[in-house]
Length: 111
Image (cartoon, rainbow, N blue to C red; front, side, top):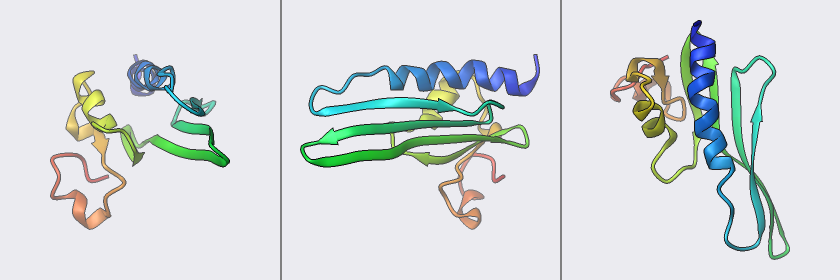
């Protein structure tokens, strides 16, 4: 199995699990968007909170050079924790929401 397929088989169920969690209040939901080439994954929050339109990215993952780049992570425990539990090594995860000069101080890949 190639790396892209392996990543897809791990990332998709994790992200789908978050997308399927219902909101308890207001007219809000999550929507999972996956690019045709399976290299971009977006978890969006959409809907309404009172009279305010909600439309924002909760999580954005991108596969670049056989690594999972976490561009945005708005989850309470962090999507990296889910990826690690699923068997993705830290060397294959880039915390891209950190500036490049800070990444070398994390236990994850720098890019």
